[in-house]
Image (cartoon, rainbow, N blue to C red; front, side):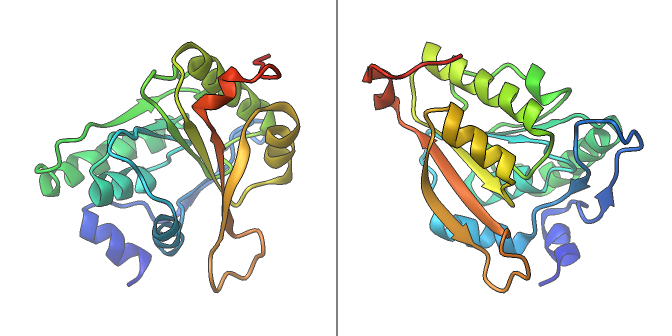
Length: 211
């Protein structure tokens, strides 16, 4: 089934690309994660009932609606482009007509990712290269500070992970890789997911730190 038909089944419109008009902006263009890739990911990654997901750079909300509809989980999307954010809200209104039976909260917030206040229950964070590594570092540090205050196990899910993200997580954070999931049939070897985890137990280790 094509992307547009899958969108239609959820009552949403997320197909297409949107470039930023300001070439100096540190946020990357909008492009939704393919449904095929999402299906592969969640055949290999299992959520728990207590999970609460945040999609940074959520665009028009495809990942948010997909997760909410398939797993009935609380999901929050963060979007910095106001026009795209408005489109996500329009999608939400249409989606809710079909998914009114799902009680889990579904939210969109407009603003910069690094300004989002991590909720103490947020424990799974999704990234499809939404912004520069400079912003990524700030977001991850916000997550680490939240986890240090309210200890819990958290995961980062990276789609099409870029080297700068991977290098930062490897050299400057206590996150470790728990899985790599390739998307079959992909023309680019980078078309994969890498899942990082920070276990609650790490706080008992002497070498743990948050800068």
